[in-house]
Length: 219
Image (cartoon, rainbow, N blue to C red; front, side, top):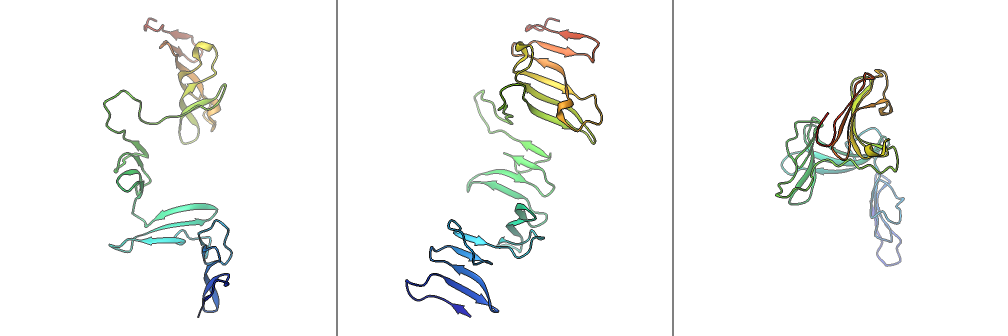
């Protein structure tokens, strides 16, 4: 049965099947599917029926076959899912920007990524930097960079040495390794090579001394 209002004084329209409310349109024009409790800003609210399936919610099916995409909130996480074997693609109408292929590889600027993360820059004729930008938003001593972790410990890292001592090394490019083979935190990584802002390079040789070059490369 369908119950609906016929005058401006009706607060909402509710659709029922099998004696239960299935969809409601309230006085503000907001729509609820699977629920009658709609928030002020919920122009369309879909309430999923279970919390153990990602194949539900807002489902969009491809015209050429039965492949589907799902948007839902399940298991405490907001979910974007596709049919098994299909990629997920993000972009504008005219341009693809990000692709996650069925194996989990992520491509930015490339449609066929063959690594866990593959970035392809745009064609340019200038010298502007393109690629991955790791921003250091700390004021002192913060290490922002890339960490390389093996099976059971953080083995090495490369980072921007903001706040390093001496001052000449603040802002340097630092390469480090972790001597503790049970350490799962990046805090155990020790600087092994430092390239300062002037281009001088310092090598730390595991306590056996230090090898330093000047900005011209002289040792």
